[in-house]
Image (cartoon, rainbow, N blue to C red):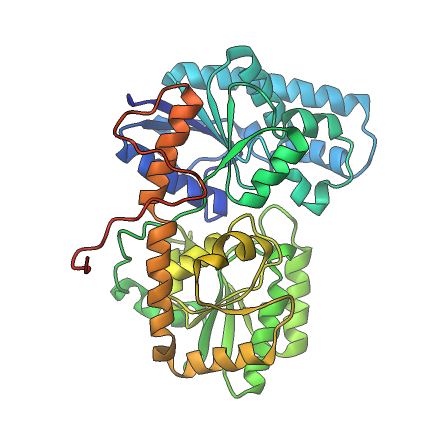
Length: 446
């Protein structure tokens, strides 16, 4: 298809949250396909010449935060709050008109902005903008409001049902797992395509280099202690207390270990982080909160200390813990597979239905941590070679099912369907329940 000018819209494009990470992958593939990409958000780390930053689009903006408190802390809202939502939505809608005109945007890709009500005025603004312009929109929905307990009781039902997501003809819905597709259809009648999260498995990561040689010392990991990595944000559904339990029980088995949490608390408050500190103290586990020293790219803190990339921390880790109870897909799982790390994880629902059946080999538990999981984890820590075959096997499965090759094919299909074009004759049709075979690496046997 002809190159398109694509506008991405979200509350933020910044940091190491799952949405921002996945957007980078989509942009890399879309640019490779010849499309141009532009970014509308409350915070953007993309270059200024392709970014359109509107502070009110960020969920932390004071006006938005005040609206959220009123909408989701009670079952009834005041007239003043309704007026504030409409006022802010009007300003954001005008900004969307300016953004699309400035960059000549031909299609929008919304990133959670029409599925998770972190910024209700932004969702309302987008819905009205789409209804008024009929601009093609690919709604990329990583999470839905009905998946989060915090939105179960609210004074925003009309907004949630009208804009999260809107059921409008120009909106083509993309979800990241089969359960989300079923729930979207059940709740709204809208059909959708599943495009899972991916990693660039065709390009293996480079080996650790001199820059990251001091990462353990810089993060404060004692000599001789194992580096256990929790590569998630600090939010309750990640069940990080189970990672603390895992480390505590390994210590009782003679393993000296430190738990490193790579991401910050994020958008759900800091009470959970305080609870984890108390729980870790109770069990005698040392936690290192490393968010200020870990970013998507290497760099320096304001006081000059090294900032390490996600690649650096994964490659330095001896074991990855991933006890999440709920995941939309599981970026951390794919990252552990990509960096060939052994992983001890809870089999969350989407893993059971969409990922696990493909044959991944992990140390897993269901709900609570069994002793046999700890014994296998201890074996892997003391003898890393015992996991070599499993991590190699997992990498090949990742290359087949969750590579950029798979994403490229899926995006080409989605954009043609979203924008109303017919598929070119050379593009084979395939069901979203199937996966195109990834290209073989150089030197592989036929």
